[in-house]
Image (tube, rainbow, N blue to C red; front, side, top):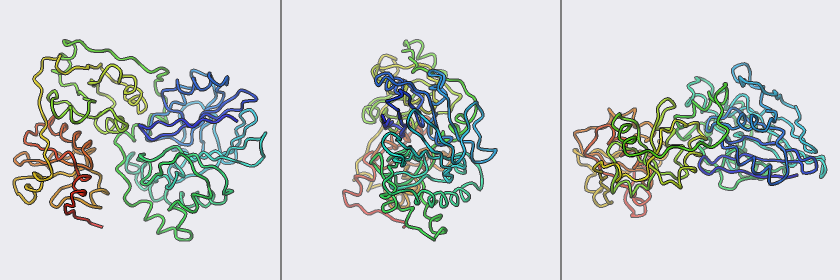
Length: 465
């Protein structure tokens, strides 16, 4: 058996290339959209991708299964579980609990494991030349290392009322099925630490059934379904705004993008024409460089591992946008954006000085300055972290408005006051400050060091727990 774990750090998303070396056949599970990765693996190992599978209809990334099938001719094996509302609306081979996929001398048994979503399935793999016992399970968003998939996404992100309670009950039942598996079976999930698909995912890529039964919180609630459900639904992170679009696009027919596109570098005239018409401009530079000098009305989303997630909060799928990025960054940034279907890039520029536009600065303050503002009725302190972070500990007097929903809550911020923005370590605050500036707020300051520094300096915080 050939096995390769393909991990996208930008979305904390795992996919899998598994092959039978004797037959030269391979299956890819939960493919990302820039499929050249799998084509390269197949070529390097003299294999043909003959099967493509998914564990469920994903919410956090745009699956590349259809792109991969279009290029390779491989058949797609997708869940037909979950009922009429949870069916893929394009041609595929439907899978039900107990079905078996054969890839050369390998077999993958389908287990229906609902909870995260009604149609969720897992794949139990057996490498027959070595043993007739299963050795791996690919759990998707069912069981992670140290955590389990959240059942509230359909309700919170897609607006499907009542689904989180039903999902929590299904998850409890699915875990009983998982717990009955042999303890030595390796567990390979679809996500790792940093994913919004759970609240406490582990940093290591894989585990075993036995280890999870000891270590994972979800298995500590035997015969106590109510407490399990309460803990599972509490303090989940805010689901990114783009999740609802991913749920739709991963279910219905859509245009395919089989290659990583190359985007145009704009001339000064092209840029100014679009900029003056109000097109959104995303500046991917470091937050400190942005603070020193940036073009008015541009939004600072650094081109790091969180880039796609925050773009998914700020951008919509109908509007074009421009990027500010170095030439050698564009391939990486384009891949990150295409993985969540943000393909509407008008073009990019690399040098803000070449535009001829007078730059602006963002004001950064230190902890002592922030201390002097606490209790001042003419100052509004905004904590843009998530609600669970804020509830755990926050600066006295700070109000919580999550950065992802900031543009929808501008009425909660007083333009007649000095506004101080902060988060945990500055990245989200830079996004927030640039969003507010684009919406006409002038009197702003950024405590960029955030709660990370505030606590180290032994400043007092307020806890609501």
